[in-house]
Amino acid sequence: MLGPHPRGPETQSCGRSRYVPALPADNPFLDPLYVDHLRETYADFPELLDAYVNGSWGAVGSSDKVFSAELAADAMKRQREPGTPVQWGVDVARFGDDRTVVYERRGMATPRLLEVWTKQDTRTTSDKLVALYRAAAVRPQVICVDDIGVGGGVTDNLKSAGLPVRGINVGEAACEADKFFNKHAELAWHLRSMLEDGGCLPNDEHVRSELTAFRYTVRSGRSAVEAKDELKRRLGCSPDYADALILAFAPEQRSAFDYYRRFA
Image 1 (cartoon, rainbow, N blue to C red):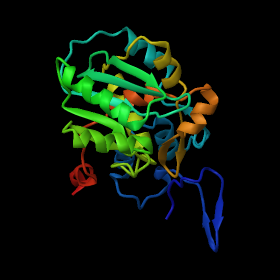
Image 2 (cartoon, rainbow, N blue to C red):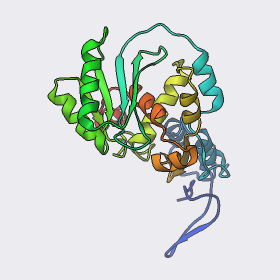
Image 3 (cartoon, rainbow, N blue to C red):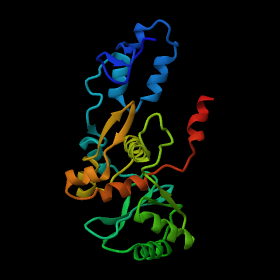
Image 4 (cartoon, helix red, strand yellow):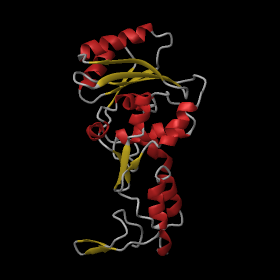
């Protein structure tokens, strides 16, 4: 069947099969709703949608920025009244040059930097977060913690202390697995959507430089954000402020079923 193929415009061979680049309009047998489905599926990826619908394959496979400088600048200028949810994002570091960063978000208002520290073990980090929570004038409904590596120990400690913690493994599969390579990409794109919808950012150079450094590629039709180690090599530091913000804006926990039942 003729149709767009994700490997690009050139003819591709696989065994005895041969893929021929074609547009949806070239195939009279496609479902009439096929292009509408493409527009819904790839609404967040205009360059990929343009490739599938119009054959503009030049940008596919190339790196691009997740957060443009213009998007970040506009979000830093905005002011919104605090709302709900009240949510904390915690990017956990242990020793070395990386930082533990804690942001508080109240709805779409400018997130507030609560704490930054370095060179602390997981028990000390956990104790500091418990103290922050108990002293907070407005306590968060959820504390989102990067659950990979040392963050897993912090998540366990906060659970034991009775705090409303949610551990997020950013390397696991995305809920919308047809669009995102992993949870990290999905959460980064969610923050981008929130900013496009009027969300605010703190006017901070750490935030500006880290967020605008995020790059993504399209792999087999899915967005993949570059790994933290790769970004750290380019920036010269770990993107801890950006990652804490991404966690502060993480959407309510949902299952894959919640995303796909609309197609039932």
